[in-house]
Image (tube, rainbow, N blue to C red; front, side, top):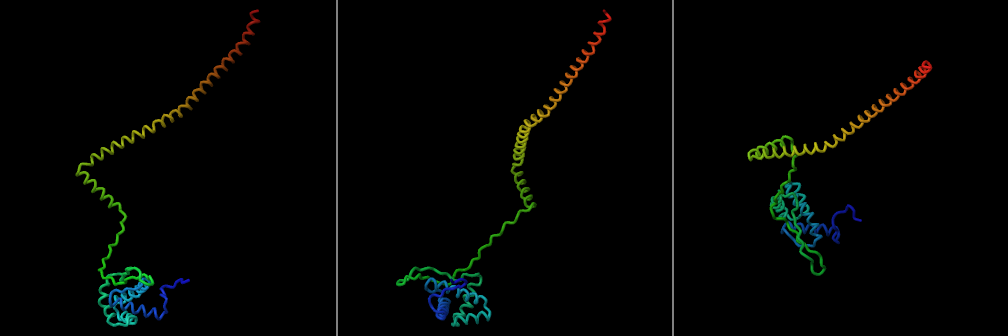
Length: 229
C-alpha cells in the first residue's frame, strides 16, 4: 500500500523521471504549452506552479533555486520578468490542462498543458448580513409610517386594526360567557343544598316540638278525669 506517498512513478527510474520533469518544465516555460500524456501533464503542473511562485518572489535566493532546477538562463529570466508580472495578482492556478483524446497505437490519453494567459479578475466576497439592531428596526418602522402617512394609508390601517380588535373582544366574551354561567350554576348549587338542609332541619324541629306538646297534654288530662268523677 502506498499510504502517504504522493507522486507517480510513471514506469521509469528516479533519475529518468527527474530529468524528464526538468526538460518538460523548461519547454513549457519557454513555449507556453506542450502536448503529453494525461498523467505526465498532471505531474508537470505541480513542478511548474512552484517555479512560477519562485518567480513571483523575485529574491536572489528564489532565483538561485530556480536556476538549480531549470538549467536555461534565458528561461529563468523570462520566468522572473514576464511571467512574474503576468501572475502577480493571481493567487494560484497558473496552468490549464485540456484533454485532446487518445493516441494512436497504445491508446494513451493525450492532454495539452499550457500557461494561462487571461487576466485575473478577483471575485467579490459576499458580506455576511449584520444582525438588525433595535434602533435600525425602529428607524425603518418610523420611515414606513411616514411614507404611509403621506399616502393616507395610516387611517385605513388603524380602522382595520380597531375593527379586528373589536371582533376579537366579542369572540373572547362569547367564549367566556358559557364558562361564567357554568360557574354561576356551580356556585348556586351549594346554596340550594344549604337552603334545603335548613328547611329539613326546621321541619324536624317543628315535628319534635309537636310530639313533646302531645306528651305533656296527656298526663294533664288523666289528672283532670278523677276530679270530675
